Amino acid sequence: MNKPLLILNCSGAKNEASSKAQDLYLGAMFVMLRSKKITIEEEFELLILSAKHGLIHGSEWIDNYELRAPSRKEIGAQDEFVEKHSKQAIKTLETYKGSNRDIGIFMTKDYMALWDKMFPTENFHGFEKSTISYDHRGIGELKGRLNAFLKIHLSS
View 1 (cartoon, one colour):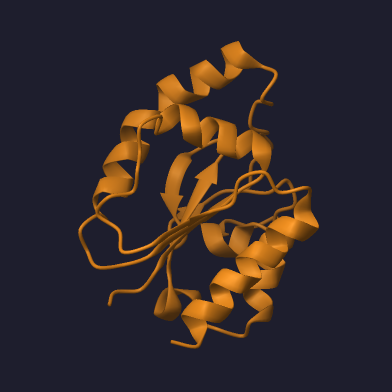
View 2 (cartoon, helix red, strand yellow):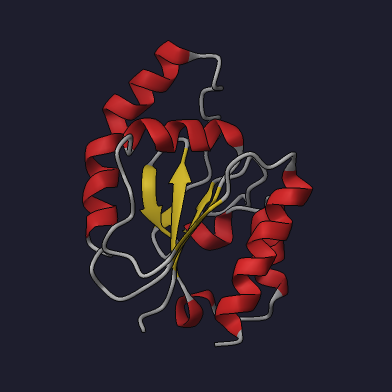
């Protein structure tokens, strides 16, 4: 089986210097991922839904920026984000389908709302197994679900 595809959203906390996307973000999900003492590229294909760049690969070099994704309550702003980024996001995700891999999506509710608008009919055929974190009750529960996904895939 190929490396699992892991999809996270960006975070407000960032390093100052330009770096790989996976190293730029300092939010709780990225801190937890780094705490596993793994080389991310060896264990996972990491995609990040960025408020500025859309869906990008974790190894992509980007500059620091200040931008927040629109909230679920900002329907017009969410629609603008989707209009701007969905074509590229769909193309990016398609490159991983049918490649004998699992997919795990762990994002905050605002980013999941954007994801659902970009992929309204996505049923994740083309992936072995999908784990998508809906209806979590905060960052602690979201981190717990990500941790469970990591344990499964780091022990196999």
